[in-house]
Image 1: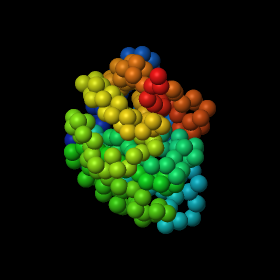
Image 2 (image 1 turned 45 degrees about the vertical axis):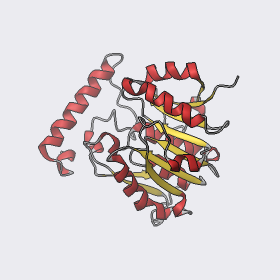
Image 3 (image 1 turned 60 degrees about the vertical axis):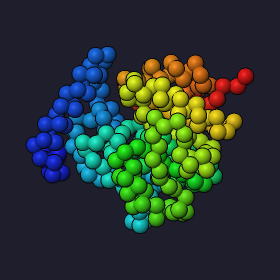
Image 4 (image 1 turned 90 degrees about the vertical axis):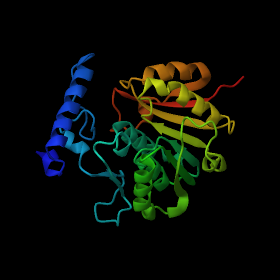
Length: 266
């Protein structure tokens, strides 16, 4: 009923039912389907939560009264587009940095596969010096629209930008090279096993820009490419896992992990 009320009609209801059935089948292969936390979207039985049109992210310190939008971020979503909606890994990473803001404060941040732009918008509000969000294809346009709709609520509205990054291109975009990031983010990009060598090559080139760059990679363990990529990553990068006690106490699950990748030292 909620999906239909959102205006997506019978096609969206059918798609929601199919997605829910596939989720149930996937998790039941190893354990019964867990309903998860109230904030989770992928394990929710209410698939209408994925088709609301606009997703609102609330900061922990959001004022109870109307603060003109500074305590929240609103993201325009598209239910049928993979990179056009907010996934749980993005929420977990956003809340992790909100819980540990010193990691990003005063830093130059690059995000790979930024999707809707939420994570980058969060760290901009937390005090990052500069944020560059990258995507590919039609995702770039929606990401840029979300950035433009929310940038004005940040202390430094022009500290965030967007550009296209094609994993198949051998050269990094000039915007990425000019940024010389301190930290790189990627949330939930280990979806397709065919992309594993592309991601590994891209990360290698990014880490070669500077000696001290770190990549924060958020993964969902059940994604098809997560295990293959992490096997490759441990062979070519220094890899550590963010311990559960460092994550936001309310925004963590048994399915998600955040890894920190760095160049191997001789």
